[in-house]
Structures are given as structure tokens and as C-alpha cells.
Length: 320
Image 1 (cartoon, rainbow, N blue to C red):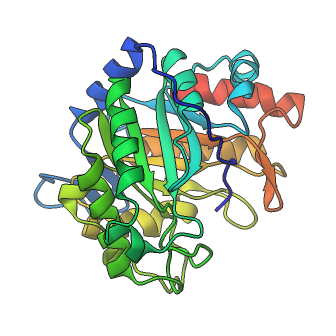
Image 2: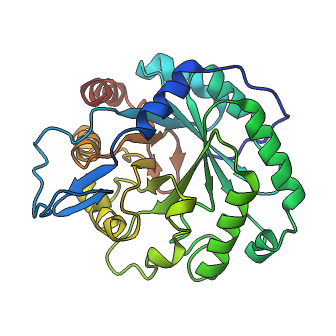
């Protein structure tokens, strides 16, 4: 539920980013497969489905994308210098109806990363979107994104299965969310845009089932999962096991990434960090977007302590 702040900017035509295009293309061509303890997300799963997948077995996919969500794009060079990592995905947030964060998008593309834009309808009626009241803005978005001619990952109303946002569970109707998503999707229809349905991880007793919020297979290219290792949640399986099982039933065939995640600083930080990356690999996910910030729920920055930064670099090197 933590996230970086949105950064809006002026319209700038993006320079070409061949490596980013190749990375996205390579991932889009891979078989979508994710398996953990008896569930799979796969277009054509093996028959019969395995009842257990060993977390110590080799990863089910060979292509991996490390990404980051930064407080600001001005922090990118510092992140690269500290971690030694050139992110393949850079996440950013924007308010639906406002200008796209094209400065940040351009900076990400120039850094040879694929921008992941989380477009959230803060203070905006979902029915107003689906009824066409924001079509002028959508035409503008479509023109700007097409003009980039480089890959962009676009998400709308992230974490809608949580209860904390106006567009989500217990505050909006799933049918209204689906209608708004589909209208945005059809209005933009830029060939360089891939659509990411970004959900929050599911916990025991969660009152918000996923299926009613799913826009439909024709409207979703990837699945993004937000969730953290913090407090009593210390392993990948504890954080994401229920979620992946649900996705097997709802969004089979869609490649998945952790679109926003981190490990809060505290005891056994290095072990929990390694478990997060190992678990994501063993589950057949395609990447992790690490949340480099501090919030009221925890400090996720890997450079909080020198030992933490060393362990982060080691983990990225091991699981890259």
C-alpha cells in the first residue's frame, strides 16, 4: 500500500531506448508461468498440475527484470551508484485527469528502462470516466504515448482490491471499475502500451475477492502485485502465496511481476530480502520493482545501514 509520490511534468518527446524495447519484447514473448505450492498461472499448464513446487528448484523462467520505485527521478543516478543496478523498470505515479508524468517517462526511457505508470483516479468518479467525461484527456494521453514510440507499462487504479482508495473495494463498485478500465484501454489503444492490472496482496480474511475487479483477459497484458515483507510477514510465501493462488483462478496466462515491494528494516533483514527475491524467482515471476523509500509502515531503503546496502547488492547480483 506504500508508494512513491506522483511527479507530473511537461510534454517532452522521448529519445529512443533500444534496450528497454528489447527487454519488454523479450518478456512479452516468454511463456507466462508461475507456480508455488500447487498453483500455476499459465496459458497451457502441464497436466496434471503439480501438487507442490520445490522452492529450491531452478527458476521456471530465465528472463528477469529488476526495477525500482524512487521518491523522485532525480534519485536515479544515486540509486544506480549505490546498488550497482541499472533498473529495467522504473515505476512512477500520476493522477488520472492530470498531465502524464512525461518528464519522468522520458528520463526513464533515456536511462534505457521501461516506465511503469500507475494512473490513479484520485477524486475522480469512475462512472464519469466510463461515460466519456474525460475523453479529451484520454485523447491527449493516447497522442503523447503513441508519440513516444517506446514501450510503456500503464496501470489504472492500482490496489483496487484494497479498502483504502476511493476507486477500490468497499468504496466503489467493481462493475464501475471494470467499465472505467475498459473505456481507458479502448480510448488509448497505443501499440507501444502494455496494460498492467496492479492488485494488492491478499491476506487471511481479506474481504475483497479479486475476480469482480478483473477487467477481462482482453484488457490486461500483465499482472502487478503490491505487497511487503514487514512485521510478522517475513517470507515471500507468507506475503504472496494466497495472491498467486487466486491469480491462477482469475488471470491465468498473464505474466506477473511484483510491481511494488520492499523489506522493512529490522532483524534478519538480509535473510528476508533474499527470501523475497528467491521466492519470486522460484514462483516464476518476471521481476521485482523495489520500493526505495520510508513510510509510516517501515523503512525499505537498502542503504539505511552499510551492511544492508552490501546485502542488497549481493542479493541483486545473486538473483539477477
